[in-house]
Image 1: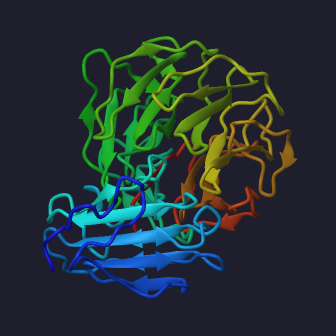
Image 2: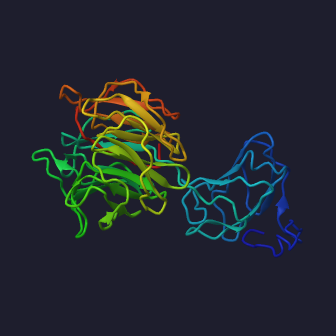
Image 3: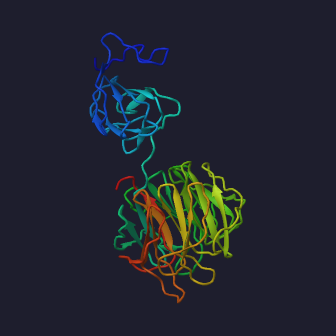
Length: 420
């Protein structure tokens, strides 16, 4: 029966009805993994454990598979569908497809190579394919013209000569889910803000300098964050335009025109994504403030929020846990070693004494899907650092690790790659 879809598979009552010569129903599945065949129906019992379902590697157009929540427990233990090299709803199989609604029934049909498997019926609140978390990171520039890749285990690689104008104090952010962008910064030789961007592909290769478009400002000591799942924002800084300006960056890396934000303008701030709906948060900055604000999942900066923790500037922010972040280090005219966690609802916590050398102008970024790393900075004595501090998936900032790479102040960080 390969290639045919029988009529009335889902009757008007919402129950599965038999069709002559239709799908063959298999025994109840209780295992944590199962590889399924086309033109079969499966009762998936997740009472004791979640279940990962691997679809056929070489389905034909019109092939059909049905899954049913046998014990009404998918809300407790979800199923995850591995599309086994084929697309699912026009998303590649690096995306995660979960269904976690009690009593759910799923009827999928293979449409061909372009869009892959398509649900013929599922409940309205089923999860659509979700991009996997960013796995790797890059530190670019600083007071030296080099970059360093960070693998999915948090190991910093040796120096690579920077492509383009190595600079410090620019915004770094992830866009498109698995690529990065460097925006603005100051050239080491004259400390002037520049109007340059560099795109970073999903293998961590930095592209050449691209001059900003008309209507986009030059900026230094600017901060960046992803938002909305696949877009980015650059906020604050100094240069041509007030330091409450921001620029939205599309999911293909195009920088939008200047816009004015409502929060208190600042430079020397930092930002990160948080939560499950694609929001971002920026906090701290000049002149030694602790005020924060949120950015909505459509890129609109919100109003000031009451400050929490030590007011300071030139800080780092790194994501952790998949939906939270931590602000760390900075200066209130003295180098500091404090951190402040941010919850998955964007609430900034009070100070925690950071483990690590007090410093300012470091950079922070997420890696490995749920952890973070902070690198570089400047000490109170004027020297610059080459140490890193790993951030656990619960937001604990670890002790200094001497990095493989040149010491520097003001590096720029961005995440990239869906692959570990």
